[in-house]
Image (cartoon, rainbow over all chains, first blue to last red; front, side):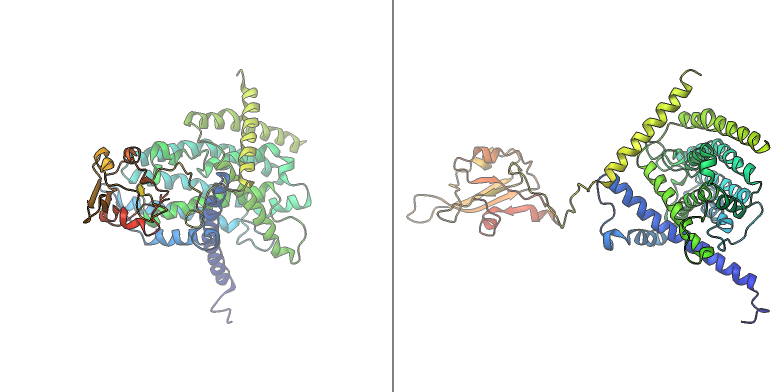
Length: 327
Length: 149
């Protein structure tokens, strides 16, 4: 191949883009199926069973259905914002894939500010939800959006604080450096157990999943911010939600659970991704398990949990870490 | 501030107990039935639509065409036709039509029958494309496996 016409960096970008899109869609397909199966078994029923062997093609068929449905725009809605919101919800959750350390060689770009980049992109999700709720000219949509903003502001603080206490130890925001620090030493979930637990709880709330799914509380708000969305508009929100789960789990694995480290495999620099994905999917299983165990919290309870428990404990943990690191 | 730490302790404990409960349920076998492939056995007490009872001796109906059921029916959904052949003392049943679209499954017809010629069927898969499918000719069904003994 003539590298002058086809520079390797361009090839790298193409492969990275393809890889990210593939991971996003395959992950969503798999997770929706897993979620429905696990939900079924927790309720002592088999879950999807009819399409394909044990219903394995169910999500594929659902996806096709979503894509072929009509996009309805409500009357008096802000048309442009209404159409932009699903894209706004989907794009930022794809971006963090660029800095996720799947294995030693499988990092698309190792930014110096990788962790900050992920958090920035994650917080853009709030805006998408606000835009979606606002533009659909629907009271349930607006309520859902407003709740989501309040919730995400409350829960981004403990996420930041818990991650900061790790950054204080590693002295770096680079994802690779953080994982390397755990390979040479202990996993940070053992050094920072409190930060790890706080991160997990806050991450659940950040992804707007049950028991913290206030923005889409079905019993009160029909579907919250995406009430008016149909077809692939809704599909993109859905895709965004499951990708968001993947992102927060990946960050937890990279920062607290040793990233790609595990029992040595051949071609470790590449196959470390197996350990990484295994840990990510264990965390996502726990998220699903939690969703089908707990009822939705009330809004004041949600706020109490964050402001009265998570943030003080995270601050305390941060101060103690700072003091110990200084010593 | 009172109860701050005890709330935290009891809350966390109950959350973990809850997770334990759902995990144990998850690994237990499922209890639902894969309906079209598996079916439950229907209890003998099941009261479906009525069906004529087959007389084991003659293979016909036990009905003496007295019309008690048709008269007792609050929805007037039973219509009986009969004729008296030449030289016979008894009437013979020639038509027994149940309009199931109006039947409220009260069972007064079964109660009122002096010869126990009608009984409840075990049929629960009742679905059709037109209302005429539920104007059931029970005498016709008697010879075709729809009958009860």
